[in-house]
Every structure is written in structure tokens, then in C-alpha cells.
Length: 282
Length: 353
Ligand SMILES: Cc1cc2nc3c(=O)[nH]c(=O)nc-3n(C[C@H](O)[C@H](O)[C@H](O)COP(=O)(O)OP(=O)(O)OC[C@H]3O[C@@H](n4cnc5c(N)ncnc54)[C@H](O)[C@@H]3O)c2cc1C
Ligand code: SF4
Ligand code: SF4
Image 1: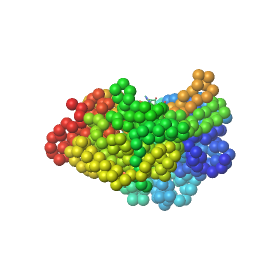
Image 2 (image 1 turned 90 degrees about the horizontal axis):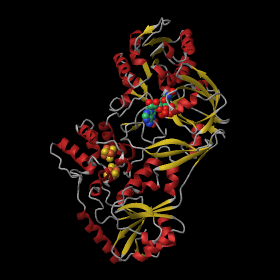
Image 3 (image 1 turned 45 degrees about the vertical axis):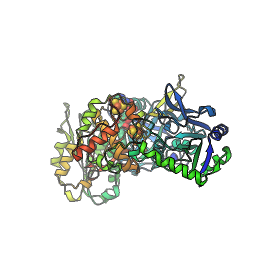
Image 4 (image 1 turned 45 degrees about the horizontal axis):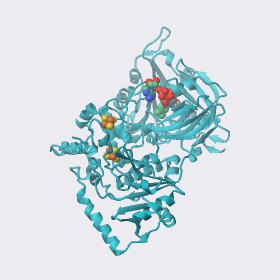
């Protein structure tokens, strides 16, 4: 086999290829990071923000964002998966060496070429860091192409913070401004307390040249948007990544529709300008 | 291609002969209603039928369809294509229009090979509707009372004979191989035109406005109070979408053998009217209320599908109106929205009273 994973859908849109689990790393009580390897010859060829359909045969399929960046592919890719139900639960019980099925990559990722030369403000909430991590690391790996990089990350509790080692490394770099907050602290927490929107006052932005990128639970978007729009960032420069129920990933099954828009095809990444007038979007 | 004529007797022999190569499916009586089923002999031919409960889409997009088979352990997976050569015989023109939409949906963007394989192995023989087939249908208002180009052969009943309009080379070849027909004469053309002209007055116009206005009507009806009313009546049973020839939303699930050694991935019809249709992990439901789901259904029918595929998502068959225990009908819905906008009161026309 040779070529890209998406090309293998030529026989059947629904036919996954097998990928081997190379590594499993627990991150929190609910999330694990899976490193997967495609059969030799196949490449993933993804853009940050895209997702794959992950199969555990006999259990089912679930859409999962690709959490690693194309700049760090090395023939493998990473998924940060929360144990949420049947498929993700079964995956959590699997170990290195076992195989899963993958289809994709699907959807429209972040238009990274339009971010060149711009300041970038990342605002992930909770598990929203999983897809944004792909973009963040891509940007950091070609750091010179971008202006200021600011990351405002909110989680419910210190125990739910994802990628703590990477957060520390980002902080170390000196060319990234990182602010982290938790809704509820524990006794060891010395950082910010409060919802993600409380961090926005700390971020100095030159709105006209800033691109903002956010992903998080459905309730978060309205509040984060108020902050971003309030800072004067143009609607077309604000990017959101949405979660919807999905059963096919290829624009047929109907579950992911936001009004007339199939999230799996036109999204999951949208600019605010694109979805502002779409009633079911936010 | 030229118009042909086939006698009633020859029609029976055509079916019998085609069965050597094709699965022939057509309308058959069952418990006082009609359903599409296998036509096993010329005696099974019931081309003069009232509307079937379930549309013929089940042969192109089955209610339950295997997509993949796999063995556990080694990860061996293979796609399943179950596409026997089939003739869909006697489709009313609303169902023909619906197939045209399904063709577009499954062939646009990512081409769905499972649908396509079936469709490519299927010949469609439609029949001109000369009398209404259901008190709920509103095909004339929806512009589906004439055939559209999805057919291979199209029949019109002239009494003792049918005219046969040949719509494709495959249709022509089928006819040449299995049927005894003759070229239509001037007299046949005249009889055909008379039948076509005479049929129209038998069909009522049921929408109070022109269907070309439907997408724009729906676009301005998002905040209508009607949705709340429909939401209060709707039972969220999903019958309306199950019987609809243009609905194709589906669920995908895995089934495993008792021994857990092998399994299959199947797709099954789903319904946007069911509570969990748009629920994600964590429990957030993007269309929580029945009102929101009814609105989604009707906007899909009247606007979204035109936006996405250039064809209306409703062909006016009326099956959903027939099936709905809450008497929710597209005709009443569309008319109410129209009168809300233009200021008049809607007269119930859904046939559901
Ligand atoms: C584009 C996209 C990207 C995503 N990226 C990630 C990612 O990077 N990491 C990640 O962890 N997740 C991600 N998700 C979410 C992930 O897809 C879901 O968590 C996953 O589909 C859950 O599947 P499951 O089989 O494990 O759970 P399911 O068994 O399907 O159930 C999950 C939960 O949802 C509810 N639910 C779902 N279906 C039903 C039903 N039929 N009836 C009742 N309740 C139901 C229940 O509360 C249940 O506990 C993403 C989703 C999308 C759309
Ligand atoms: S058939 Fe009627 S009651 Fe059932 S879901 Fe459809 S509209 Fe609601
Ligand atoms: S919405 Fe109702 S009337 Fe329209 S095509 Fe579907 S079943 Fe027929």
C-alpha cells in the first residue's frame, strides 16, 4: 500500500485501515494519549483541526481530532481521547501493539497559511486543547512565520489539565505567552482561579493583526466570543472548532448538521464570520 | 429515443423474461395496502395501485445494510457490496423524483459506493400517475406529477396498452432483449397526449402558493410560532422520516457474532425526530426540543436540500401525513407559514382532519 489514508476510501467510504497502537500514555483520570502508526507506505497527510473516524471493531466508530501536528508526524500521529462511552471506553482498555481502524482525515482544518505574519491568540477550554495542540505545535515549529503567540487555557480542576509537560515547555520558551486557569483549585494550586474568560484581561492584543482560535465545550463559545469580539478582533479572524454527533464523517448521515451545514464537511473549523448568522451554530 | 408501445399481455411476458436476469420489484397488495415486493409472476403485476406504505428507496438504501465485515483480532476488514441486478417497476413519479435527490446526495462530495453500486445495478421503470394515489399527496403542487430524468423506461397506461418512453440506453437494451413492443404511431401519440392532458384536473393544488417560493418561505420562517405548536403535538416517533422517500439520515453500528470472532458494521435508518439524534457525549443536545426537531425536518424539506443539492427535499407524496398520529402534515405546515407571512388564515388542507 502507498499513498495517503484518504485515498484508501476509493473502494468504500466506510472502510477503515488498520493502525497499530505504538504507545498509550495516561494524561488524566479521563484522558489518554494514543500514538498510532499507519501501515507502511500510508501517510496521514492532515491539517491541524482535521479529525479521523476511529474504529474499535465490534464496538463502533467515533470522530477524534488529530492532536499531533503535521510538523511532528514521523510516521505516527497522536489522539488525545476522553473516556466518554462505548468506543472511547473500549479504546481506553487497549494497549500498545493492538490495532484499531482509522478513516480520514476528514473536515476542514485551520487555514494556517492565512495565519502567517499574524499574532495568534489560542483559547482552548478543557478537552478543546486536544485539537488546538496540533495547531499550536505546528505554529511553534515554524515560530518565525508568526507574530505574538498567546495561549489562554482553562480547565475545570488542576487534575484535568492536559499536557502539563508541554504547558511547562511552552512557558519555558519565552516566545509564548501562556496563562492557565482552573474553575476550582485544589490545595496545591497557586495559579489563576476562575473561568477562561477571566484570563482575557491579561492578553494584550493588537486586534487588527490578530487571529483567535478557540475550541471547548458548547457552553463556552458565547462567552469567549464576547471577549474576542470585545477586543475588536474581526469576525473573519476568529476561528472556532465545533463538536457535533457524527456517524459517517463524509457528509451523508445527517447527525452533524447545523441548519443546512454539514459540520464534518464544512467544519469542524469555522470562522465566526461564516457561522455568525447560522441559528443553530452557537 | 422513440416512443414504443407494449400490450398488457406483452408486459406480463416482459416481466417473466426479465426475471431470468433481474430481481423484479413492484407494487403488490398486502392487507388492503400496497408495498413494494418481488414480482414473481405476471399475476403479481399491479401497476394500477394506490400509494405504497414504504417507498421503493428501500431497494437502494435498505433499512438495514451491511457496510463491512470483519474478524476480531487480526483486524481483517472487508467492505460488503450487495447489489443484485434489479428492476424497480411501476414507480410513481414522486418516488422517481425522490430517487433523483438520493442520487445527488450519495454521488456528491464523497461518493457513497454502497449506494452507487446498487443504483448502477438498478433499472427504474416508472409509470405516469393518471389519478391521485392518496388523499394526502400533493405532487401537483410540488412539481412532481411528471416524470423526471431518473427513469430508464417510463410507462403510461392507455387502457389495453402502455406507451413506453425510453430514458436510457440500458432501458432500450432491456426492452429490446425482453419485450415485444412496437413503434408508437400518430394515433398512439394522440392517445398519450389526451391521457396526459386529461389527468391534470383530477389532481388538486394543495399549496396556497407557488412551490418556487418554498425555499424563501422557509428561510424566513425560522422564528415562526408554528414550530412550538408542532413540537407540542409531535410524539417524536420517527414515523414521518421512516416512510419518507427522500429521508436518508442513518446510524452506523457494529454487530458481533456470539463467539465474538466476527462481526459486521451496519447502517440503519435513523430519524432526526428522535431525542438523541443530535446529542453528543457529555449529554449536550443541539436540538433538544421537539419543536426544534420539527423545524429542522421541515427546513430540510423546503430549504436546506435546495441549498445543498439544488432539489427540494419533499416530493409531495404525502406518506408522512398518512403516517403521523399527531396529524402533522407538510401541506398544513407550509400553508400555515405562508399565511403567517402574507397575513391570511390557513385553511386545513392536509387531509388529516
Ligand atoms: C470533530 C470532532 C472531534 C472530536 N475530537 C475528540 C478528541 O480529540 N478527543 C475526544 O476524546 N473526543 C473527541 N470528540 C468527541 C468524541 O467523538 C465523542 O466523545 C465520542 O464520539 C464518544 O463516542 P463513544 O462511542 O465513546 O460514546 P457513546 O457510547 O456514543 O456515548 C457517549 C455519551 O454520549 C451520550 N450518548 C451518545 N449517544 C447516545 C445515545 N444514543 N443515547 C443516549 N445517550 C447517548 C451519553 O451521555 C454517552 O455517555 C470529537 C468529536 C467531534 C465531532
Ligand atoms: S410521524 Fe408525526 S408524531 Fe411521529 S415524529 Fe413525525 S411528526 Fe412527530
Ligand atoms: S416529507 Fe412527507 S410528503 Fe414530502 S416526500 Fe417526505 S413523506 Fe412525502
